[in-house]
Image 1: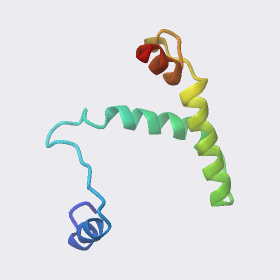
Image 2: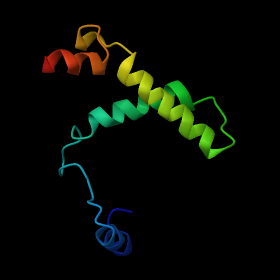
Image 3: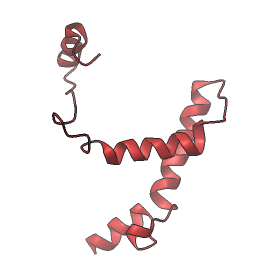
Image 4: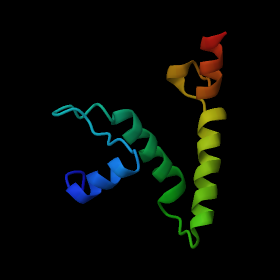
Length: 89
């Protein structure tokens, strides 16, 4: 899809910049791949959503939970928000 010229032209028309990993470097997107993997594992697999609005609400709630409530060992058992606030103080 990323190489289809009509698609690329539409991105340019709408001033959207294409983002792809560097050549032969699978680690560029590993952080986001992990994040989306967790999202799908925790709120998508095994559930059936009948309306887009319902799925959107669940995703938005999960993002809020992930950023403000979900603690991580590598962040010193802080949430991402708490960790960033601690760094900036």
